[in-house]
Length: 211
Image (cartoon, rainbow, N blue to C red; front, side, top):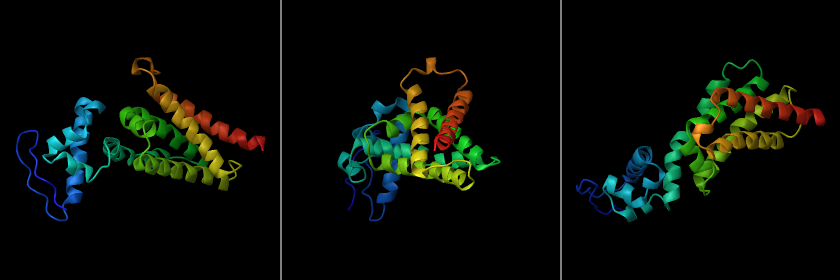
């Protein structure tokens, strides 16, 4: 299916897309939405604004994104997709699986606070396919760290239940601050991330002691 011609924000009409160019247009739409989000905030990212910036019609956008929310989440995925590497880098110097878990937890919190808009849009807004993909990826990474602790007898219990508890602690720590003005955030966010990570991991270990 070809994309209809439409004038861009500068008044230049975009040529019709050739067969097979849909993937490229999708990336252009995401890039335009990303620019609007960075320049003017969430409210500026509308389907019409993105269409005008790229130079296609509004219906052309809906061929790739079913809703404005899906478009926003598509933009956020570009940031969230870096979380796995971010946690892995933070955990690289860990001397044992329990320290690895703690380092991954602290990295997750730092990531959320470093990208508050992208975190909030996906993790706290209406659920979409991107929400499920992000949640699955995060859970899988942390569950792997928990499993390594279990295999090393550093934790005991059900790996899924322990991972859920850890994830709840981390998400709560990020969301608690995102609900407040940055002006009242802790001055030392690195210490905040480390403290919460330590508490989350200590809680997982205490859970093992109770059983």
